[in-house]
Image 1 (cartoon, one colour):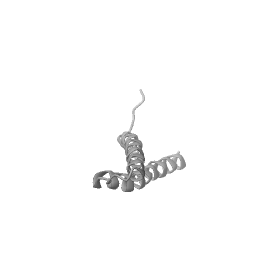
Image 2 (image 1 turned 90 degrees about the vertical axis):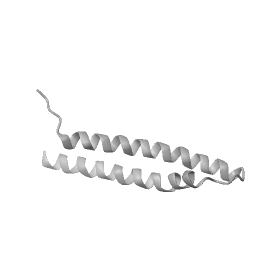
Image 3 (image 1 turned 90 degrees about the horizontal axis):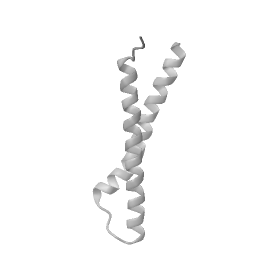
Length: 75
């Protein structure tokens, strides 16, 4: 029987979180740009999510890639 390790499940969740954060941040970035060009005041939360979401998603993605490289070198 095939058993999935706890670490593998955690990495799967980290990658799902990274994808979700990237998608939400991209929508916030588009919203921020539309509001900027319409000369509407941009809410602080939209600005923060668009500025910090994508770097956080890339860092989480880097963690997943690093873990996968480490696992392949072990095998």
